[in-house]
Image 1 (cartoon, rainbow, N blue to C red):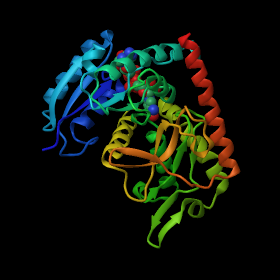
Image 2: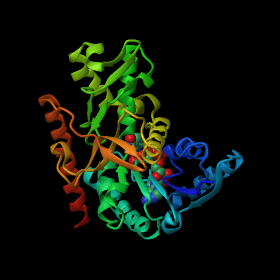
Image 3: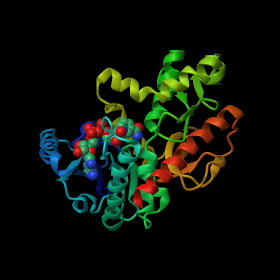
Length: 331
Ligand code: NAI
């Protein structure tokens, strides 16, 4: 029998939370034989809604769900958790300056870092979803020094999956035949979706995406901007930001991290940079990674052309700016 896993979802009364918790309770995140206890955190104004979500979880009678903790108390929420999915945050409201949003989120992530450090299970794996995701993750890392840096990540898997989806639509193939796209950098509009190493499985074997698409103008232009702007396009269509795709991608991220990525396939994760590919160390930056036995490692040795280099540097620069903005909020 596998040991019970406690999964924390912060911001659980929000839109992504509402899509995510049933996926976790159904085994989408950790597999169909993994029993879970869900810990859900939100803030007092959302306490009643959070309780409603808890009621629905009870009503859904999920076989794998062995318990639900719904709370507005950060310590109670973090106690004993093995996996923490940080979806709660302060959204940018009309008229707010970037610095104001950053400042709110920095203080949230600083406080939650301490609670996780003190009360989570040893070796707890953390995924930050809430924006600015990379920088929230960095603050969390800095204020939870006893949690290994490799345990703190942010979500760029949604962008990765969006890139796979765009290539699949363009080539009219099923998305599962496309692999090894890369999202470099920030989960923002400066991210660089890179297809230079991506392949498609065809009846004649694996082929390069560049070769099959045979339209560099599209790949270097519209493809990139479509992936970068996809979040905005969803908001325009739904009048709400992406939720089911974000939740599903968060499950993909944790599943691959815990259970391993498929052989020959890499995925994108925002991780603490060790300087690979000339990305400054000390940023949370999205890289291509493979996962095995609960550990990710950055795919090494990929050839980077000049076009890619410039885009990888631009998104690194944005992250360095966000980092100093975040630090200035702490002064
Ligand atoms: P939402 O506004 O529906 O839900 C956020 C929830 O967080 C709310 O229930 C709110 O009360 C709660 N919250 C606020 N402060 C909190 C705190 N200190 N502790 C615990 N909970 C707190 O937002 P939604 O649509 O669910 O999105 C959540 C976040 O995810 C946003 O920051 C959004 O920008 C981000 N996002 C990130 C994506 C990614 O790929 N990395 C994709 C889509 C959204």
